[in-house]
Image (cartoon, rainbow, N blue to C red; front, top):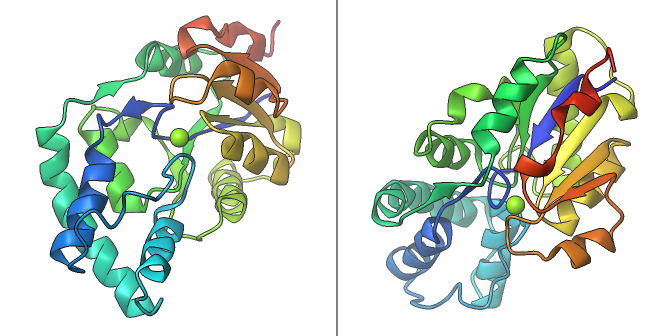
Length: 227
Ligand SMILES: [Mg+2]
């Protein structure tokens, strides 16, 4: 029986219309003097900290805690602006999906599993009225590696529920192969959604437990313990 569901953010719950990438690009320019310096980074499924590390390495800056912190502080400051300037949206069916989960007779814990740093996650989800729907989370400032963030998110879910969870009691929902991989890393099941730009065929080749074009297609009743 599914007891905890952990959601990725970008491309899974919301699309920021490029606000996140724009804030990264502005930071490279204003804080590090590297306009266009994030152009070659691949953002899909990545953690914020690993992106900053790649940026610093790429441009010959020392990868020190100070530089990472300075990047992320500037990024968060600029993200607020960028979110209001870009037209983002919730991915199709997200609000209805969350409501359907909450209406199950024994609703699972709903949490986050994201490469966004916590404050960035909060800003993005608040911009779309979703932040308050999530009880726990693992974030990009908990660890640089998504697989380990998954372990942290699962542990926090266990603390909240007051007991250990077996793998098949946890589902990770995400839009990239990295989400499927990090579900596997903690023994959880995965629901892949093709709402973030990775094609369904590409997601299928990573063998998620479930795969849908968007969340409107997924019948939450399969997680109803009475079924
Ligand atoms: Mg994503």
